[in-house]
Length: 574
Image (cartoon, rainbow, N blue to C red):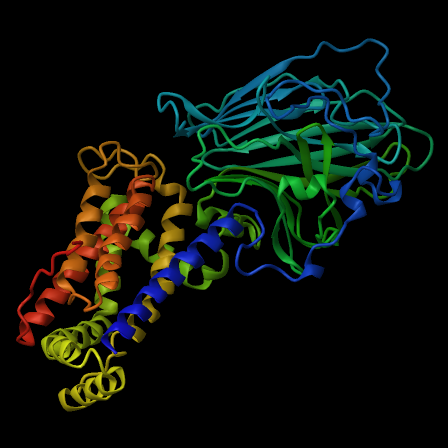
């Protein structure tokens, strides 16, 4: 029974690794490895391509003017993907870039369409070069990630239309809380579009007002599209070992949060809620996201499509309504472009916090993050906050752990009898089993007593794993000494080496299995799993190391109290 108990514990540990791997696959936007979705869950979506009916609006959205192939080089437009070409004004305006600065942004707007083509986050350093600011939006030879808007339903102004930037300040000065950038289009198809971007101090959501002026002699009913366009490459500096999801996502009350892999868009394997009066369209990557937001109650059509070679878009289309001659109608929207800070996301619109994806353990992960955030308010250091959180969890599970370690201590106390009996009856397996059960009964030992407490804790610590992996607060957050960034691996591998040592110490404190093969596996398995920690972020390794140290201390104390002096059972591989 002692062997069975150890086997069950290893099965539980292995199952936890399986769940982590499966969650990793899903987090990357891939199909689950072990728990695949029903075959009917993913269906071909005609609206995901440019061949959707024009009445749906999406096919009329002009394709982007820039594209990238997998190597980052420019590519020609996809044959057959046609869109209305906006008429040019009589005197073509000179295309210019406008740089705008606030306390959190350095933005670049393009006068072609009044689009946002570059967003530098001034309070977040680049991972590869920490002397540079992190670049979220960009339109360059190697990257495309932009925010665009325009009108469809006729030969109206789009994101390809040359617009005029109106005079005004280009930086948010001390004492000012708001900065507006205004673009005006020429008269096209009887409509003029005035686009006003309003940035506020300390915020990552930008108000975008679209004033549509009817300059014709008849009533017109255009539609407004809001889209995010980006290439299908992984963000620069993204780790290949624990890569996270990059791609488009949408949210509606009906189908909740749905993230779609780029290759599924290319293969027309998209099943999203297309018509809705709520929700958002977003582009997601590790730690950061962008999203177009409309007010709840405003009817919208959500879309995803491939617009060119290695170039994809996600967005929304909404009706402006009938505009009488000489009249103006306005549509208010917001663009979020920034870090996945949970409290900020929750305050903007329902469901936006889900871009910080905890998966099926969200119900446990959210309160763990809340507790971690409260500890940070007290300690002002994310590293020590992680340590404090693990200590609190160990305190919360103290009695469960005590029961498990007490059971292990009893097993260790009777292990000499079991070993002697197994040697004596090794030729009579049936009698050996009966004798083993008698010893357990007389000694009042439950071989399974340590399993349930461990099983209960596994989901909690897996949830904490995803909290630490997903939280942008860990990015560039120092701890002590040589740990300057909790989101990257330990540069000197000190924490992974300590983690390996603590795992081996735990193994040495457990009673040695009588079976030689099991004894070898007890030592080999911690070494195999410890290899992963050399590539994990320092914050994750520190969390596991702290948990190991506290577990060893508790096991040591309980064994001593029960009169079972701790012994080190060293491996025997001969």
